[in-house]
Image (cartoon, rainbow, N blue to C red; front, side, top):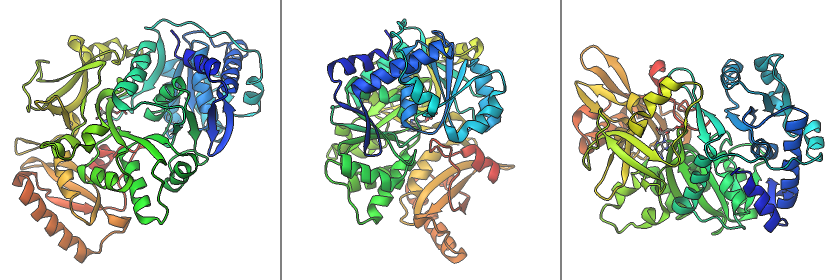
Amino acid sequence: MNIAHWLQRTALAHGQRPALLEGQRLLYDYRQLAARVAALAGHLRVACGVQPGDRVALFSANSPAYLEALQAIHWCGAVTVPINYKLHPRELAYVLADSDARLLCVSPALQADAQAAAGAGLPLLVLGGADWQQAAQGAPLALEPRAPEDVASLFYTSGTTGRPKGVMQTQRNLLAMTMAYFTDVDQVQPQDAMVYAAPMSHGAGLYHYAHILRGARHVLPVSGGFDPAELVQLATELGHVSLFAAPTMVHRLVEYVRRSAVQPPEHGFKTIVYGGGPMYVDDLRRAIATLGQKFVQIYGQGECPMTITALAREHLADSTHPRWLQRIASVGLPHACVQVRVADEQGQPLPAGSLGEVLVRGETVMAGYWGQPGATAQTLRGGWLHTGDIGSLDEDGFLTLRDRSKDVIISGGSNIYPREVEEVLLQHASVSEAAVVGQPDADWGEVVIAFLVAEGGLLPDAGLQARINAELDALCLSQIARFKRPKSYRWVPALPKNSYGKVLKTALRAQW
Ligand code: AMP
C-alpha cells in the first residue's frame, strides 16, 4: 500500500483526463503527470539519495510543482514534511533539524531564506526550476511498496504552546481520511476541479489525494493563494470547482461576491469545505444565501487529519428541522471511521449536553509525535486522542465545539466560552469579525475583552464606537448571562491571523 499508487491507477485507466492546471491553462493529463512523478521519484532516489522512510521537507507557496513533489516523495517511499512557508527561517531550521530532513524542496522565491535555515549540510531542490523540469524527463522509478503503518507524512503543529511537534500520519491514516471524504464530505466526479486556494501544507493539500483517486482536475491559482476575484473567475471558466477554505476565507469570498457585479454561475462552485476554525452562524447563513447549498464543514486537527466530524450538506439544508439552528452551529457528526467521546478529566464519557474535552479514536488518529514518546503517551492516553478542544454532544450525536481549552475565560469562577459571545456580537450589522479573549484582572481572575472589526474594514469614529458598543451591550444582555458580556470593546482594522486563517488569540492577549 502506497498512496501514490492512486496516481498510477488513474493514469492507467484514464490517462487522457486533464490532471494539473495552472489557472485555466492545462499543464498535464494524468498519463503525463504520472510519468513526471515517476521520473521525479527517480531523481530523488538516484541524484538526491532519498531512501524509503527518509523525510523530505517542502517549503513553498502553492504551485503545480508542489503537487508533483508530494506525489514524487510518496512514490519513492519517503515521508513528506510540508512546512508553512510563512515560518521564520529560525522556525524552519527547527523543523528541518527535528525531522532530520534528508532534502528540502523549496520554491525559487524562498530559496535564500531556506538556504540560511538549512545550512551547508542539507541539499536543496528548487521546485519547478530548470533541474526540476529536467528531472521530470528522466528515468522513472518503480513505485516503492509501503506498509499501512509506515509514516507517509510528518505534519508540524503550529506550536502556539511550546515547540512544534511532528505528527506522524501513516499511510493507513491518509487512506482512511480519503475514504472518509467520499463517505462523509463529498462524492468526487472526474469533471470536478479542486482549486488550491488555501495552503497545500495544511488541509487543502490533504484533499488532493481524493481528487487524484477519482481522476479530477487539480488547479493551482496563478496568484499562488487565495484571491476572491481569481477564485470566482476560475469557478466561472472551469465550472464544478471545489475547495477547502478556512472560515475567514469563506467570509472574504462571500463579501466579494456580495459587493461585486460578477456572480458565479450555478455550476461554478460545486463544494466549499470549510473548517480549521469556528464558522459563526451568521456568516454561514450569509454564505449559503449568497452562494447556495455548496457548503460542508469538517472538524479535524493535524493529529487526526480532516476527519473528526463533518456537517453534511443535507443537514445544512434541512432548515425545517426543529434543531436546525443548533445543528448549523455544530461541527456535525463523527466521521464513519472514528468514534468521538466528550469526556471528563478522567477520560470518562459525559452525558449528552455536558461540556468536556473532545476525545477521538479510530483509523485517522496519528501514530504519535515524531521522536516524542512522552508527548505521544500524554496525548493518546487510554487509547484516545485528547484533542484539547472543549465541546458537547447532543442527543442525536452532533458535536458542538466551544473553544480550545486554553482559550476558555474563567471570570469570577465561571467558565466563559468566547465563541458563544462572538456569535452574539456578530449579529450586529456593523460587526464584520469578532474575537473574544480573557484579560487578567485582580478582582475577577479574568475579564472578557472583545476585539471587533467593522463592516467594510474602516474604523468607526469615537462617537459611533460608543453608540455601537452600547448596542452590543444591549444585544449581549438580551441573549447571554450578564457576566459573559464584554467589559471592553476594542475596534481594530484587522484581527491577527496565521497563514492558515486562524485568529491568533495569543497575539490578541499579548496586544491588550
Ligand atoms: P490544526 O491542527 O492546525 O489543523 O488545528 C486544529 C484545531 O483547529 C482543532 O483542534 C480545533 O481547535 C480547530 N478547528 C478545526 N476545525 C474546526 C471547526 N470546524 N470548527 C472549529 N474549530 C475547528
